[in-house]
Image 1 (cartoon, helix red, strand yellow):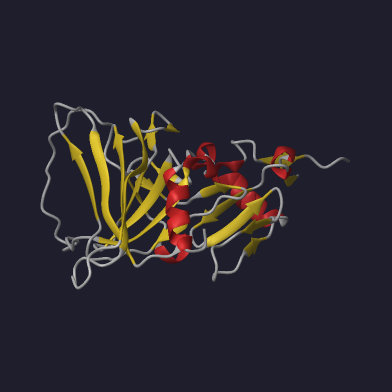
Image 2 (tube, each protein chain N blue to C red; image 1 turned 90 degrees about the vertical axis):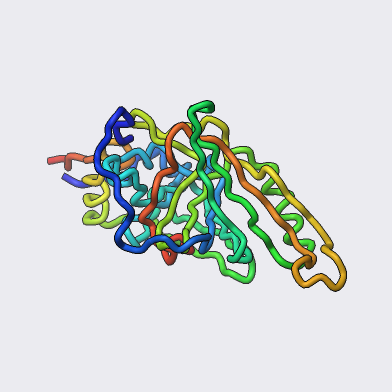
Length: 191
Length: 72
């Protein structure tokens, strides 16, 4: 991991205009489906830039993609001195309409208590939540990442902004800021 | 000298990426997809050049790929 010791270097507003809000898409997987020993190789994780370079999956492991209403989703990682850790909240992932297959998929995902997600922001960057790289190894975060809320609602008749839908939040706690990933969208869709 | 995939990976193959390339070590890996996507198969790496590349990327140090001395 980067050396998380006291340092007061220059910090500036980003000049590349990577400030567009919201989420592009999310890929998720159960942490047991990733080979974390191999993920610790220098070739797969760049310690200096806190960035995952490549993924290594166990046999049978595959990322699923969450296709939600893009206007609503957001990722917040909030550190407070009182807590001493980052509260990581991926919230308001809204899936319009209902189907039995979607309900079953969400019900099954709720049974996962160690989700790892690569989250593509609309600003062109990608973050990874659900595992942390500390002292040369990937470890569980302070609190594992899991679905923390699922709203399965009919909505209200005649209300344009209250249609039948599923909403989920995914939450956990990290010791340090979530890592970045340089694995691009096209590659993630093959994993 | 030649490179071979460690025997234990035959029973628990892995699938890895190197940039946009994807490889399987130990055995062919079939990736099941939610319909309408089709399953994909990643073939197990057998060629020496790729095995060497992966060995040098750290999979040798990890014990996933072994360097074998040819018998005289």
